[in-house]
Structure formats: C-alpha cells, structure tokens
Image (cartoon, rainbow, N blue to C red; front, side):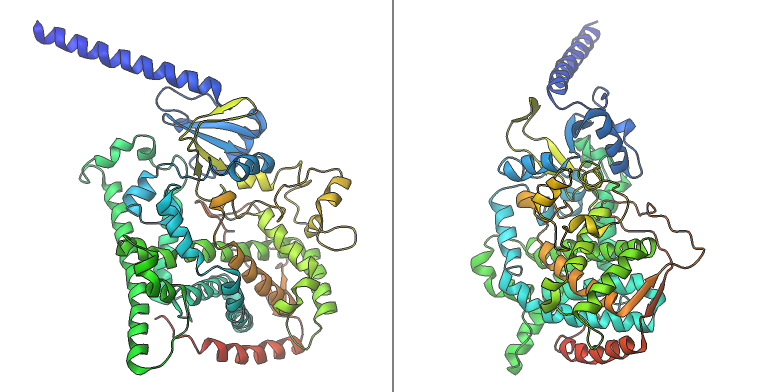
Length: 535
C-alpha cells in the first residue's frame, strides 16, 4: 500500500511538472512570431519535411509572414524570409544574434566543439575568427590573385581537354585554390586522397546540419545513450574523429615543410597554416591540437565546395538562359578582345559579368538555409513579437533570394536586374525608381550570411567567381544539348545544395580562343610549380 502511495505521488509530481512546463511553453508560443501549431513537447517535428525543408519554410512564410516560429521539441526556431528583417536582427542587432544554438550532433558528437562553425559567440570564437582572418586580410587577398588566375587558366585548359568532366574540374579548381591558401600545396587531381576525404566529410557535415534531421537535437539526453543501442551516435563520433585525424595530418605536412626549409635553407611558400604555426604560442594560447588544426581547414568549408556549387549553378543558368551567355561574351569581346583572356585588371569594366555573378548567387544560393543558424543571447522584441534568449534564428536564403517583392519573376535568371539604365551595376535609387523593394545589403543578395557570422571566405569566393567565370565565358560556349530536358529545380539535398548532374556542350569559341587557352596554361603551370602537390 505504501509503495502504491509513493508511486501515486511520484506520478502526480511528474504530471504536475509536465503541466507547468506545458503552460510555460504555451505562454512563450503565444508571444513569439506565429507559425504552424506545435504539439506538446514534440513541437513541429512531425510536420517538418525530410526533403528540402527550405521549400516548406517558403510556403509557411506566405501563410504566417516574413518571420515565423517552428519548434524542434521545446526549442523555438525563428525562420526569416525577408532580407530587411534578416538585416535588422542579424546585422543591426548583431550583438544579440551572433551566437550559435546548441549543436548536439554536429557540435558535441561530431567535432567535440572544436570547429569555429559551432562555436558560441564569445572570447573563444573571437580567437578562432582572429586567427582565421590572418589569411583573409585585404593584403593577403591581393597575394592570392596570381594563384587564382593561374588556377582559372588551368581550369580552362582542362575543360578544353575533358569537357565531359566539367563538374569534377570545377571542384578541383576551387579545392586547389583553398589548399594553396591554407597549406601552400596544390591539388592536381580530384583523385588525390586528401581531397576525396574532405569532400566526403563536407557532405556528411551538411547532412548533420539540417533542422529536424536528428531527434537528439530535440531530446539532447539521447546523446548519453550507449552506442550499442544508438549506433547513429557512434557513426557521428567516428566520422568526427576521422576528420580530426585528417586535419592534424594536413597541419603536420606544413610542419614538415618548415623543418625541411630550415634544414636546407630553402624558403617555402607562405600559407595560413605556416603563419598560424609561427604565431601559435602567442596567438592561440590554450588551444588543443584538434582545435588549432581545424582553423586552416575551415577555409575549405567556407570557400571550396560552396564556390564549386555556385559555378555548377552558373552552368545550369547559362544552358537554360542562353541570352545571358551571349550578353556576357559580347561584353568580354568589347573589353578584352580575342588576343588574351580577362584578368582582374579588367574587372571594373565588366559590369555585366559582375551582375551575372550576383544573379547566380541570388538565383540558386548554395547555403540554402542561410548557413549555420544563429542564436540569440538576450531577450528581444521585433514588431511586438517576443524572441527569448536562446532562440535559434535561421535565415531562409531560398525564400529571401527568391522574394518576389525584391526580385520580380524570381526564378527567371536575369543579370540585368542588377544593372541600372546605363549598364552599370544598379544602385538603391534605380531600384526605387523601378518600383521594387531594395535589398538592404550592398551586394544585393543574402548568399554569404549576415553580421558577425558572415561567411569568412566570401571575398576569396567572389574573386574565384570573377576570374573563373570571366575566363570560362571568354573561352567557351556553354550550351544546351538539343532535346535534353533541364530542370532548374533538380538540386541535391543537405544544407549546401548544387544542381543534380546534367549534360551540356562545352566547346572553344574559335581556334584563336583555343590557342590562347593553351598558351596561358603553360604560363599558369610556371606559377603553380612553386607549390608542391598533395598526393
């Protein structure tokens, strides 16, 4: 009888606590931005789509407005679908919205919180960011341009020889630049073990970063389950340990380069890893080896796969909108001629090319859900809605970049939307004169994120796109195959997206263009010979 009484009071206490928690959740739910009705304790878990959640979020934005709330268990996530709202919260109020939510799968299990990507806002994150920015200063970016130019020329030559491998060659181009910048080594082939491994890891990490993908994000206590009954947990941990070993091995390769240079008296090429190793004692006190090794490798995530995916979207845009290809080539012919391919010095006189790049970034943003989510660190209010501290804040870049109020007929690829009446890049005034809302960002799109968490590799990525697309459009016709069905919505899953593979025709525009590509390739290889290859 006594045991029954104890059980009764225990049950009563549990039920009472659950009711109190539920009432508190309801009170919070009523004060926050509206959204789909959550279930007690489960939230919207059952209504979150397993595939392409950004499309569902875009549809919900039409129902609930440009800022709405979904619930992952008892954790609220605010979804933003308007660029003005995104800038107001994540840039103008960046002191409140620059942290990260708790990442159980990707942060605690996969990376053991050793990555800058998952670091909450604070002193440790600031140290990571400061170290990373040593390789991203304006003077450093200028030093990378000869390598970027050489790699773009090498890309053109490789496409000339193997046009059917265009997607793999775009991946090699961006990976090659990142590895030269990060480690002072070049990548000659996507068959190199080091690069294959990094692309595998990037794809796996993207799968961990999708809202609702893992129940452990809603119920964090599941991370403590024994791996015998939670094999998913061991899989995540094993992938993370493998990534840590790879990043440390890459750092050790630069250590060996430095040791050999000291022994032989021969200088080695500068790189972010070399700079970090030389300043580690003073610049990174207290960092363990896994944390330290993650910094140069983080450039790979910031500027390699994402840039290659943008170039893939550019190819899809060009074969489905050939008028854009013809307009870009007309500009390049007028400015550059046929005796050489474009260089960075030509960039100021190529407004249509720059508008085309902006349109690619807008039309099909790679970080389709705005990159890694932000989190608020203080209670806040927006237009009367309550946003409590600890709220996950996610900019749906898909919905933002395709918002019809800012971009009429948004799925039509039209670089001219970024040009004014005189053919120069459009200004805020010209937008207003056309009767459309003005995107608050200077770039005119939201593809690199916001505020203090903006993509650190954005400038490298833009420089890559300028030189690569400039040379590619100058050298080649990139055309649709007659009768081939192209689907501009056929994209991969995951947090970073790219078009599903498609076929196209890539051919030199003339024999003269072919000869220039071959000659510039020889010059490019003289530049790249300074950097030893990664096997």
